[in-house]
Image (cartoon, rainbow, N blue to C red; front, top):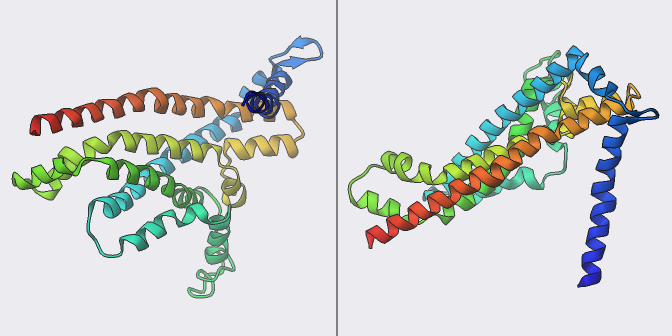
Length: 275
């Protein structure tokens, strides 16, 4: 066990700590010592501000839409008796098991200039599927299963006796939903929002394939390093993604977990009062 712990620590140092240390050293240390020229050079580029805004806008919108779709599927599967729940469960998680970038490639093959649907069915010869709208659709389809799986577990872990008691007292399904189910699911909703937001920010493949002129931090860092041969600025762009990601993680780790504990305690008190 001791040797296994040493091996894990060495792997962590070699493959995580040392690369991060090397990146920060490349950004802030030059031959003459500390050098903040890379930061100044980055803020002198107006394109960077637009790239940051693009990443934040894409992350927020994809997180909201993905969580909404995931909640609808999760509620339908976990809290209703609709026909075909197993089929909808399979449809909801299918994008998780699909190969990477397959959704972006499918969008191009189906709705591109020579797409099967756009040109083969509708006869459209000039269609542009590259850009923000297509990227938002692809990321929503890619990350909604994450929200679905998270919210499905939250809804299934709820005590159904609270809702049954409300129904027995004459409450309508809509009133039970927004007074009991939705408040208890709020921690899971916030957790899904943060998870999908983080996944959207760190996504590289889909923006690279179908993003077009819509640049994100991930693609801009890659193009800066490989295309412009500017390793310092590209490294700084890559590191800058850590700030919103770490902020979202800390919010999820501390604030959302406190909300989960609060709602769990409130549910336990409600059950005790019922008895």
